[in-house]
Image 1 (tube, helix red, strand yellow):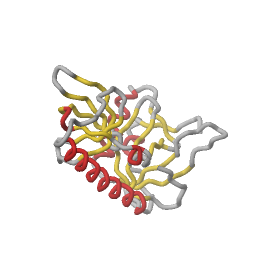
Image 2 (cartoon, rainbow, N blue to C red):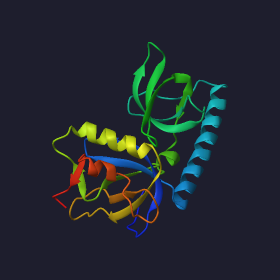
Image 3 (tube, rainbow, N blue to C red):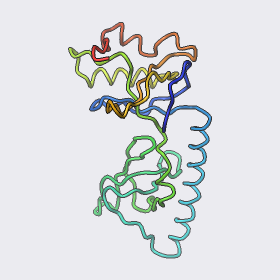
Image 4 (tube, one colour):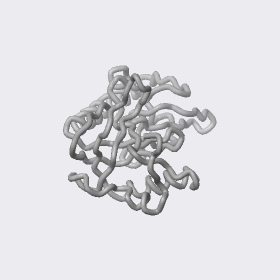
Length: 206
């Protein structure tokens, strides 16, 4: 998803904190994005229902191959979501999947998997990958601890995102730089506590 610089924040939720880049995966609640997510969900359910009905008449033509895209039925709500097969367990007749729009994992029976057609694979992922502007993890603390605290803090409540800078192809910056706030007026940083406690410090490279 592409997000533009703006003066005020838009509402979002945290999906996942990645310590290897480091990066944040967020799900914005802007109108056009919400419409895309709703459209995708409805179409995934329709495609999955059609495939599962056909599977009752003939053997399902799913290739259970590691790395293959698929539609997987989430055990919590019974709905289907786009996923990637990470591992095939023929002994248990199960597959390990990663839900690509939510970055969560689950082990499912093969009967809960169906093919993901190309038209659904071409739809952009349901999150944006960003990094915090102006701050970095304190080098004196384990990075896993810093991002663990950050994810815990951001999971507690929705926050507002202000985009400071878009990626610069010439400078090889691949992620938008953002600030996260507790309210739309962008006055109080959502992670101010982590700055006060020296989990996050000023980024000297910016």
